[in-house]
Length: 434
Image (cartoon, rainbow, N blue to C red; front, top):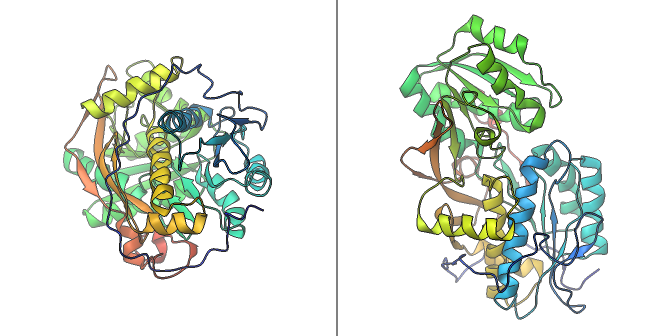
């Protein structure tokens, strides 16, 4: 095993304040659309080949299977960040190599590839997984090897883990933006439909908590297996309850059918979400009016205006001209690769313990979504949250931004700068109404 991977000790990081990190960059030459020297589909390492001490990262993101439409952009944005960093001189003068086989939306394959990335490839940092089920499948391996790990999907929240940096928005941040908005706009009666695994179930808990906090109620809820694509009975149940709005935390290709079936049956009840549009770009893939009055709490969508994001979108499509969509998680992959580079250079080493200590010292990031910062205690980000709204033509507009910190982990006492943990806290343990 590489001598860069030392046992993880815990220490309070001191003496360094947040440092501004500009993520804008330009490619030295036009990309070939493959992000490196190989296609990355057979366990090969892509990118510039360096010496034995060249830094290597693993980017294990789905490019086939049920989560391919979410994971492909994550992989593409990661390689864009690597291309920019290498074109600008690399990290500590070394160009980054990338280990990036396709996990194929298969959690057992994720476990095998994670083990291979850590033990055989000796990667300096790991980006892996769309679903929370994937994250929890590989986290024991990550913990066993004290591996620096970036999880970039928006998720249910609660992971307090000494080597894991969950940099996507949490349910408290996303649902905390959209649920109160919809209660004020449409009324207090909510019907929840969500994916039947830990992300959907815990997101359902958060909807109940937020409803209670805003004098609303969840009139019913359904948790749908990932392979289900027939929502006839669910739509009938919703029509029977006649809620003021629906909260949907459906995910994956099969669940997309809900929105088309909703439109076909004339179910015109507004829908709120923490997943739709920003991840699977349903507003682009589905014909209007399937997404009419869809509201989603997001930290990023490619439609966000402003010169910084427009430049980012341009660079992404220059590198990947056939890309389908630049989704929320892709932006998170992009800025976190640059953030890792900043922490390595501050540490002056690729040693993972030293890099984690620099991350825990606090880093400010000029991300495409806006200026954000890493919260040292929780390893999460304070994000710019918006409510995106799709009209009958699937045109998207955004409400006023809120800057929301990862408050739940603060409430439960997660402080990884003071105490080592490898826990996922659940809202039902701390809120009676869940």
